[in-house]
Length: 59
Image (cartoon, rainbow, N blue to C red; front, side, top):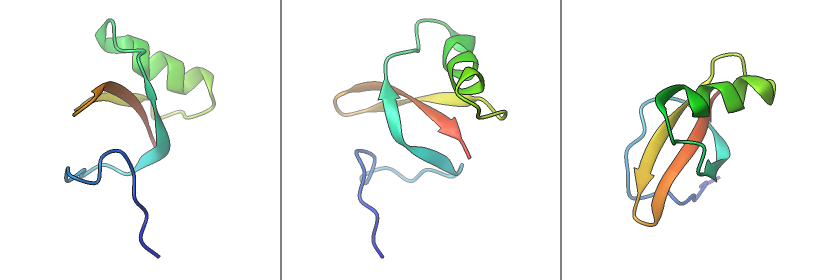
């Protein structure tokens, strides 16, 4: 099964939970804290795409 996402043009090394959330990247820890509060203990990273910056939680 082919999974297409907004990041299909990029190679992402880390296993991220999709869909990523637009925003939550005003400061470095904001995305990680948002993911942790949603039940993803590894936190998250901010990834820049063609249409903005997204917060992606780590699987």
